[in-house]
Image (cartoon, rainbow, N blue to C red; front, side, top):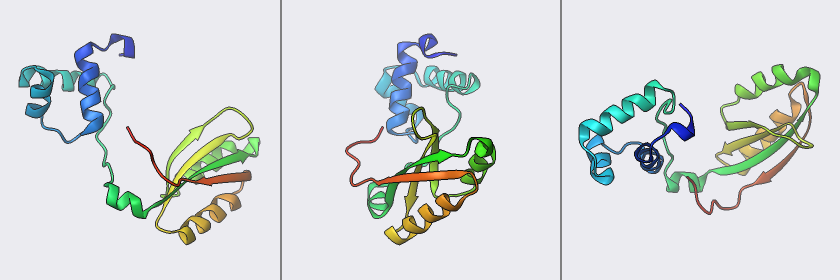
Length: 146
């Protein structure tokens, strides 16, 4: 199923789930002005077609405020791209890895408990075989998240 195949109700349902993936089917039905069984069947269809692949934990603002987040731009040695990506995937503090165009090949979104842990993490990433160089930016404040 593609974005263009989603009904307006499905798109509204997805928006509600992005805001609160733990919302009950009854609550979603009320907000959408649909029956509970209609919402349940739409959810099932969205899951079966792969539009919804799972439900994730959203960390609370108080917890996130204690975390240090950074974006790490990574330039790779091209012959070692696959093995380097596998090594990066094994680092639990990397919460997302993006392939990008431009001077750098990847952007790693990382979270750490402290600046010291972030510093160690950046050293670990830079020391991986296949990493040519890195540039990092510490996130000072998240203005909003979706």
